[in-house]
Amino acid sequence: MVIVSLLACSACSKEEKKPVPQEESKASAVPSDMVVNDFLPSGSSSQGLAVKGVDGGFEAGLDGPSGGPDGSADTANAAGAPTVPTVKVIEPGSEPRAVRKYAFVANRVERRVFTVTQSVTAQGQVQQPPGLVMTIDVVAKEVKGTSARFEMKLVKVDLADKNKIDPRLAQAAAQHFATQIGTSATFDVTQRGEVGELSLGGNEKMQHEGAEEILGVFAQFVELVVQLLPDTAIGQGAKWERTDSANDHEPELQSKRTFELKNVNDAGGTILITTEEKVPKRAYPDPRMPGATIEIDGSGTATHTFRFDRIATKVVGEQVKHAKVEAPAGQDPTAGKKTIDEQGIKVKYALETPASK
Picture: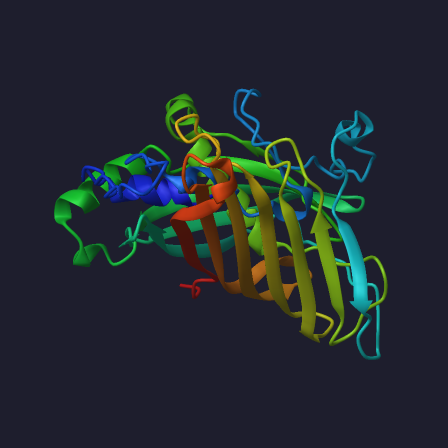
């Protein structure tokens, strides 16, 4: 999950990691500092989202953009970069049907409050770091041809329920977040909701100290505020699927997202989204555990309330990922493997439009 690193940083915990009790019967002891979370792949990016760092060198390894702001062909795809996700309409829905497209309005600032909380289960222990509340402004700076170029800006970030936590923790988190306020990024969106490259801006100090964290937050935010629409006529009750091809960062990832248009009118509607992700069993990336394997499963649901002329007005959802690590049961290679660790992440998020003053 792309938000995990920022949430972990907000916790600012200095607790020492506790070693896992080792049983004599185990051929492979679990290293006390093993953290599977580092290997949980982030949610597959929004409609082929590509993330590029402020210095042009950071590359998140996500899919390439689908087109320029003027609707022209994308040079990255021409050079062999991954193409846009595959969209398959399962059910066209009831009449009246129409080809649904976004018609974004330029120069209208949209403010959204993004709240995310999580719980992490690792080595039999459950950790619940403080949640985050982020206020982000988004504006379509340019609407041209079949797409629009958006600018987003981090206005405020704070801990949720900070009055219930240690004041020292709240103060340390506030100091950490202070360098990130004002960070901005731009991204392109087509009329179908295909999202292009996410380019990060901000002051030089923030670029070096918090670029990866904010890139993750912004990428997750963009994934929520715009959803991919099929290029064929659909009506209420329509269902379509989006599958994502593997990429260099997550070569084994298998991801499918299913959309159901619960209701729709000329202004907008509601989409119910279910997500399935899987990384098949593969070698565990730790040389201290030869023969160990890891497999990852993920699922999620979200209710997306949208308008055709702006980004989503409300999104409520939940994502769960579970990782299982197995290692040889003994010195005998025919003895099979046993589960030595299971870890998981559960994330709840909400995106809302604040009441006008």
